Every structure is written in C-alpha cells, then in structure tokens.
Image 1 (spheres, helix red, strand yellow):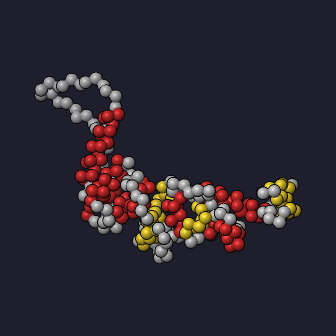
Image 2 (cartoon, helix red, strand yellow; image 1 turned 120 degrees about the horizontal axis):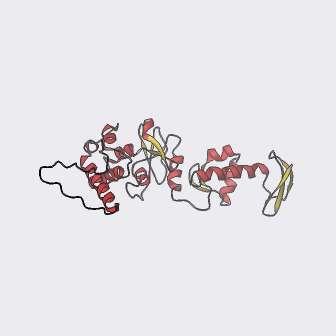
Image 3 (cartoon, one colour; image 1 turned 90 degrees about the vertical axis):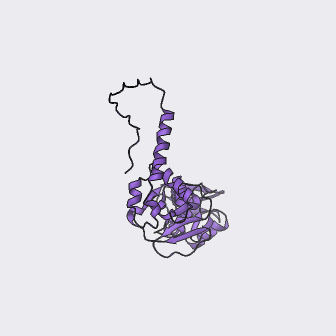
Length: 256
C-alpha cells in the first residue's frame, strides 16, 4: 500500500517499506530522507533540540544531506559535530550541546552543574568534566578528572555530576560565602546530607569536612519555613513547676 508524501508542491509516492515508487518534482525529498528527518526530530525532542553528527548519520543522513540542511537553515551548527535541529534553542539547549560536544564520558559539572541543581546562578562558560582528553571548544571549560559511577547522574535528561561531587568540585574555587550558601541550599533541597559530604571521595578541601555551620543554618531555615506555613493552633498550657514536659519535635530529621 502506497502513501503520498508532499513537500513544497513536490510529490513522492512511497511504499510502506520506505522505498521510492514514483518521484515527482526535481527537488522532491525521497522517502529515505523524509524518514531520516522524522527520526532526527524525535532525537532532538529528547535533547533540547540538539543532535550530533553521529546521530544524524545513524538516522540515515550522509555528509551532503547534512551540509544541505546547514546551508538551508534546517540545522544550525553549535559545536563541531553538534547541531541545533529546532527553530530556536530551549533553556537547557547549550548545556546539552556542551556535554554532547565533549564525548561519551562528558558530564555537566562545577558551576554549570550547581546552576542546574538550583544551588547558584551562573551565566558564564559551560563547565564539563570528562574522563579522557577532549579538544577545547569555544564557550566550554573542559575539566579532566576520574569519575566514579556514583559521581554521575542525570538531571532533567542531562548527564551531570552528582550533587555531592558538584560541591566537592566547587569547594576549592568558590569564595567561602558563596560555597556556604551552595551547601546550605543543597541541604534545604534535600540533595545531600552532611554525612554524604564528609564521606565524599576526592575531597580537595577541609571545607566539606566541617559543614556543621551550614547544616545548622539549613535546619533553622527549614524549621522557620514550616512554622510560618503551619496554621495557628491552640496555645499549650505551661506545665507546673517540677512537672516533666516532653520536648516538642521540630519536624526536621537530624542530618547525619
């Protein structure tokens, strides 16, 4: 059974297997390329509009087809071997593009990872960590370091260092006040615990070994937030002198 595919007034009759039966119009797209474009759009939809040259080739587009799409504006080159296949970039397009540009071992890291977790604001170059050499890319700060499996995770579909590893990486490079706020925010968001930070490998600084002050601030902030949100209840009577009174729970689990 055949179906008709139409593009810019040119018609191509295609079989259900994707092979051309009849082609009308000198510039009509063959079914092979139409199916390839459909696959590319599916990949781009999962990667904030970004695709790699390898993914384009696997989908069935050769070098000439890729070059033609770049020339006509259907693909926009972001880095070598990385393209935008969407009309406009999404919020996380450039983070995903940077990770894809640096190879299969790459993860978002340092300031960029902290921004993805909501630990700090960052508008500078994109930080990526790799476990093997990667060529420099404009706008990307590449770090080379070993990464254990528990150092890697995904956040909103982007490969990224774990929250604990992100803080380990930031410890030697952030000013003390910004680092303390990042640790506090990570604990408020329940991304890490003080115990996890103390046990984190590759610690470059003693600042992660003594997070008690940030922990106390995080707990106080959480208690205050919950008390402010709780409805006012009846006031408890003060126990008579000499009577034992149970200490009310703060509602916050102790951080290990």
